[in-house]
Length: 321
Image (tube, rainbow, N blue to C red; front, side, top):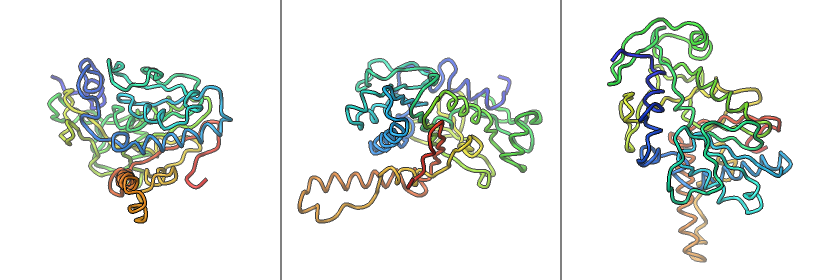
């Protein structure tokens, strides 16, 4: 087949007929890679605390929207709803945003979750996108030219980068070498944020900033829990880290996951030893929770994920604020 630009190849491989994310059946994303959502229920508990903060800033409206963009199989939404007190949960309108159809017969999927293909318009509440932007297809450039790719992953040199893509590179990823043109992620994030009337939009992802762009890029694949070459044939996830600083809109803050989760009460501190003798079962539970918290906030691991936190019509959320 004729090689195409990476953005076209990723779109077909991930979301085209029989694509990695839309084919029916199978284990879903959790069967191929481990996210913070799957690592511990503490993550959903932290998002629930953030939702309570948004709720208070909004004056506790009759309907509180919770929009999970890139919802997988609804695991995060289910966890957040379970972590909320009944009065608050009763006011929440949960939306799972996925291009794949709702999973049939999925055990434990809360019947209140509304499955939609795009973020609903005119929402009020929290829009949360965990590891979504890294799967928004994008083009690859090398030494000022587009990189073309065949279905077997073989790359070749394309035409020169120009227009809006060139302007994006000059502003956000200057210099020679290999680069990932993040303009489609900027546009996707801006469109998602624009659906909020009031509230908070949060994107969490593998990320880098202008001063730390990787010289050889980050494009890779995942299948069955292992990192594999990025081959756009539909047989694996194809992903690249996100230039979150380029996505950030007015009033947005960039944090590490370690900073954000610590502020939301996720602590990897060891429980007091006195608890071991006073209540051994409670000590074991607390110790397990501390281990999970440590994984979520670990340097060199999940704790280094980027959080882009963008307010819409409410004060900015800041750790310690």
